[in-house]
Amino acid sequence: MTITCTIENGIAEVVMANPPVNALTVAGWFELARIITEAGRNPEVGALVLRAEGKGFNAGVDIKEMQNTEGFDALLGANRGCYAAFAAVYECEVPVVAAVHDFCLGGGIGLVGNADVIVAATGTRFGLPEVNQGALGAATHLARLVPAHKMREMVFTAEPCDVSVLAAYGSVARVVDRDDLRDAAMEIAAKICTKSRFVIRRAKECLNAIDPVDVKRSYRFEQGFTFELNLSGVSDEARDAFVEKRDATYSK
Image 1 (cartoon, rainbow, N blue to C red):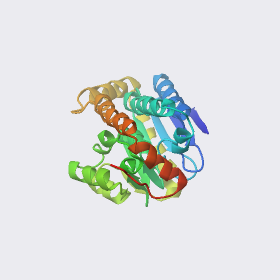
Image 2: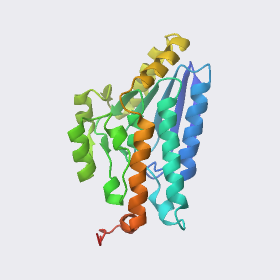
Image 3: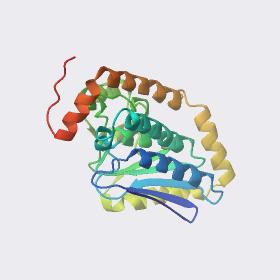
């Protein structure tokens, strides 16, 4: 797994690369949070582009790591790691432009939902498969991308939607060919960098302060239900079924 950050012309470019589907380990989530936070604090940076290499933007937590770890350490680590990474995007001192391709699932929604601007490749799918894995979370962030009833449908069915749906709602700034994705994100970031660094940082702080929903508190509330589901035993069966590539058998 690699998460890199390069800075050029005032733009910090953070790239995730964790084959096969860019699902992040516990350590990966914390590392992503650290890198984004440090980049945002760099006075030379005026905007940050968050993207991924390989298959998909982000497939959420590494379920195999969770099932191969005894006890609840991996669950606790993943919850805290996701919380830290989502918060790092939201609280990044400069605007974050997310460049999304192929799919954005689970934890990926947490990252993108907290970004300031989103560009995506044609055919990209966005979704929360959490209920299939006996978990909850990131509905807080999906609600920033789609209206309430669409969000509920996506949570209950665990079915993803095409980027064209988000574009119709105005959540995605641009939908471009995959080959043009990075350029589109860098173009928006470069435009932001032409503004006063001081003004842009105050603008980011101001917009966060007037948000109608406290995304950190809201997401933390959701995580509490994930802990409840795990204690019930439902989550373990759901994750085992995922790893073993079979249908889950629920006793409740």
